[in-house]
Image 1 (cartoon, rainbow, N blue to C red):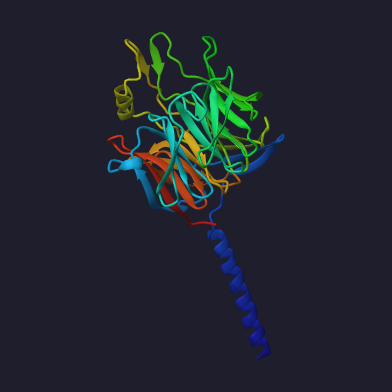
Image 2: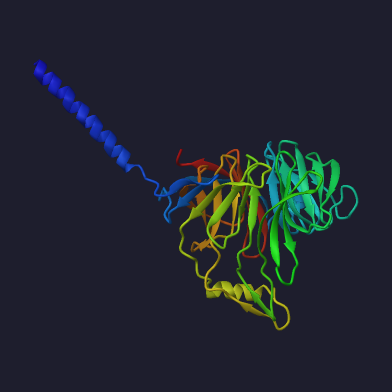
Length: 374
């Protein structure tokens, strides 16, 4: 009996080992590499994501604007929107030159700014950003300055960029300002990524990329354009999509500490895209548009407060959604999700997006996020 009992225990032990091994082998295995190249951690990703099944689900909770909007929900032309810690949504209407604020329930609260050039007025606003640590709203204007307001709408200050003509701007929790400047130079037209102090003074030039320009009456469409965000840890996340690479700079630093790369198949420019671009009427008299065979490596990206990066590719689903690559906080390519452009951010379990229908009506939407993985 003793021998039989011992044999049974041994058999059960081996069954447990086999079950554990089978469970481990069933887990998906990431096929990329993470290695140090000098002081930079380089995360190299394969073409295929870690998970083939959906890694998150979205459920629509709130919609502002759209064709049936009334009263304060009627927008002229929305450029972007940002969210504060309380879940209030700040919508930049460039046509009206002001920012409308809606609370967590979607109720209109206030309007910040009005058209003009004086204190508290906005001159051709281009983008907005919230500094959650300082509870400030920053508005980039075409007049080479940023205006700052308290979240209750009280005007605080103007910051002049002097000779810098910023195309977009973001701030970190310290008040550091990051801008992309367009440099008009016949021999070397380019975009430059720059870091400025809270007073607008230049601290460092971080990166540069060629600017698409027309030449000899010809304009090249779908050229690579640099893009950047500042994440919740004050990292500048920057990419120039001539290749599939995204760089991470340390807080208020000019040094790159991490790079994410991914193998990918180039997406061809379709005849439908060419026709649509020509309909947009962006060319001047007698100007010819040249179309490349393929798109750039990706279009743009946004971040979550948990460190995920969502990269919008040029791949489209049949219903017109853009396929996004999802990277985890380590930089591993973990999954893909089709989304209506444009994704803004994921904050406190909510996904925020600016979407537009076929008739051009814009809506700012909020979705509940449920991750299917841990």
